[in-house]
Length: 129
Figure: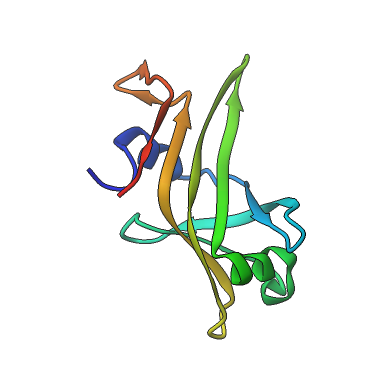
């Protein structure tokens, strides 16, 4: 199996929908920092990349450079109240090669509220890759 299940991959790549995500990093004092971010899935769907304006100067970028850890949640809520989403935990790299970004290689993926063949898929949690 790949990094993501079929329903997870379908959700993360929904055509015409651009979802905001939240990334969590760990500061030098151990405090958790969560912030909304733009993200993209690599062409081979094995890594997630996060970037933004003046990205190399951000706390999240510095945290990842120091710890090599991050988690990302991509989610939404369908009416009337049907939450769905994917949490991605993994090894993270702070890359500054002229296009600063954080790259997360999933180690654990948790998903909820997704569908396969029109049927809800139970919450899934597993080690990825």
